[in-house]
Every structure is written in C-alpha cells, then in structure tokens.
Length: 113
Length: 115
Image (tube, rainbow over all chains, first blue to last red; front, side, top):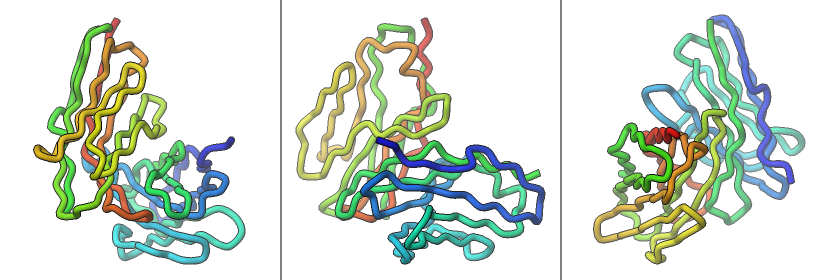
C-alpha cells in the first residue's frame, strides 16, 4: 500500500527560476494539503485542494505561488521566480473524504541558490 | 484563534528513561481534533495518534501513551523506556472538528535518546 508520494525529494533552483513540486495522494484519498516547514517557523499550512478545486488557500503567499490538483495526475505546487526565502521543506498530505487524519509524504527539500 | 504550544524545545534522555512531551492547545471550537506526529532524522512526518475532543480516554500503544485533559487543554505524550530509535522531532497539532481543515502545528520538541 503506497503512501503519499512526493517528487522530487530534493530540488535546487537558482533565484528567478521556477520550482514544480509534485504530490500523489494515497490510494483512495481525494483531499490534498500542502504545508511548508521553515527552520524558525515550523510547519505551516498553505493550501487544501480536492480534485479540480482549491478549497482553502488561506496560507498561500499572494504572489508567485500556485497549486492545482487536476482530474488526472498528481497535485502540483508551483513557485515562480523563486527567492532564497523560499528554501524550505514542502510537505504534501492527503486524507480520505470525510476523514480528519492527514497522512504526509516524505517532503521535497527546496534549496534556492 | 487556534494555537498549539510545545514549551519544551529540546529534551535529552538516556535509554530506558521515561519521557513526557507536553502539548497545550487553545481553541474556541467545541469540536476539534488533536494529533501527534513524529519526524525522525530522515525527515518524513509519521502520524502517531488522533484524538477527538469528546474522547478524553487516555490511550496506550506499546511504549507510547497519551494523556488528554480538556480541563487544562493539554494532550501530553509519554514514551516509556525510551530507545535510541525514538530520537526525533515530535509535533503536536490541532484541527477544527471537521474534515478538510488545516492542521495547526506546535513548533515541535526535539527528543534525543542516547545509549
């Protein structure tokens, strides 16, 4: 039973480039959440999506960040024109419809040079 | 506003010692969920337990036990006879009492168990 899959596990980008982070939820899970872990800030919620819908993006920075969860394929967190402050671990979690427990993937460590 | 406080930033123990990780939460919701997650050195986040606000029964799973007390808004986690493999960062988290809501995490407690 595969868990939540995230790729890449590590991503290095130069300032100004784009970063694309992918997340495949656990089998049978239709809800996806993205969190960011910054060294001094801890884990913070970014966005919650269901298939083809963004349900709650209250934690997303207003600029440069976007997320999608298409009908087919993984959820994508996209960061345009990355800056050094975007360096962090980005975690994806998934849950079943109607369930409160979120199961996390291994994370993507983004380093912006 | 919802908030989770883990006052212990770091704890160091020797193997076989018992250790308790504290978690205090704030919420105005009458229905809510509390969670513990473990983040070992490899970096992934591992779900340990979920407790809903209507269930104050303590839970034991092997060497792990959890003490939920609504009167003090606490959800403490005890590891009995700690082992080196327990070394990790442990996060307490809170969510409103419905599916699909964000987890509010504490800042975590780093537990180091030495042999």
